[in-house]
Image 1 (cartoon, helix red, strand yellow):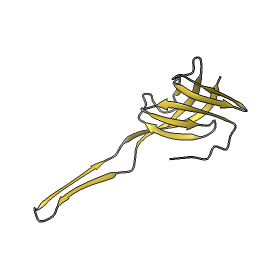
Image 2: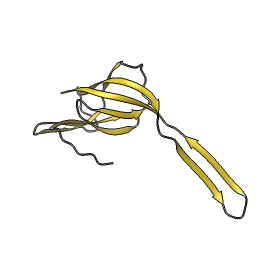
Image 3: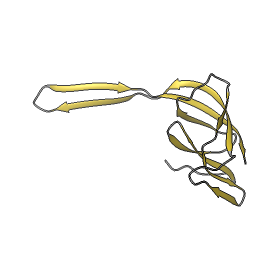
Length: 111
């Protein structure tokens, strides 16, 4: 999914096995992270950081960089339904899956 970047200040961070483009003042849904609601977390695996006209790219990560966020809530995502079917064989299987997610509010990006 490609998102529109409105700010001149953003970071690309790896968290929960995925990569996110993070901007201060926005919330993001990530795979379940450890911690309780309203805990402050530090995302230290920063892959790229842009502040104004300056861009810093890590190889693979940038040292001494982090993104500060607050855990808002833990919840379960939308249900994904998997249905298998073979015609003329009376074979049907239906399974569902809901992923465990964490909503994180990004407070500040440190350089």
